[in-house]
Length: 113
Length: 112
Image (tube, rainbow over all chains, first blue to last red; front, side, top):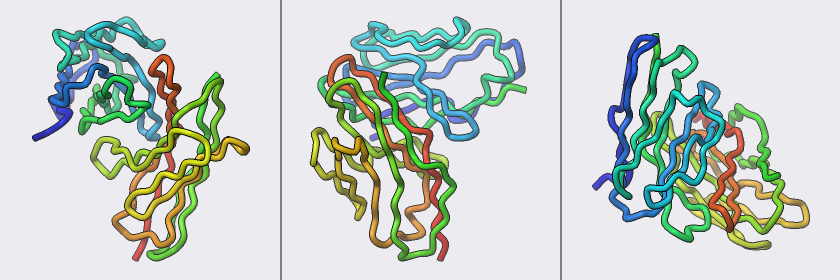
């Protein structure tokens, strides 16, 4: 069983389009995250949700909007895609009081042309 | 503020060589420290962790000791294998606030 899953694995789209990436975790964790990893492998946190409530929202453009329909899902919707949005996006989750241990999904490679 | 600094890569070693990847941190409180590993085409996986000063985390032959006096958490392995080729991330988490801070990652390539 996959602990943290993301779909799709690859996403190629044109500038200006709107797209969504889905994330699901079956670990029963309370907190979920979205990270962006650039071509140099630099990892930047974008959002963090705890029990469907936003607790961290780093300085990302408001074209990015997370949606958490329930504790097990955290989807990422991106409007008006730009070339600079090309990256690998990782979803992660962690249990309450985990002291920092996170479980990552396999990533979604987004290419904007 | 909190931050993590790790040595820049890429690092290339021959099989069975000794590995050290340096990591230092800045924290306002009492953080937990982690090493994560990312194999090609995959997400990050927790490699080891230490939650308080002088703790040693270990896994798969890798070790790191939480040194409060030098604010360091260097990753070491006595004899690397080709299968250890990956990107390694040092990370910090404060107990309060659930905030995470990752280093920039160090790419390791082990050649036969």
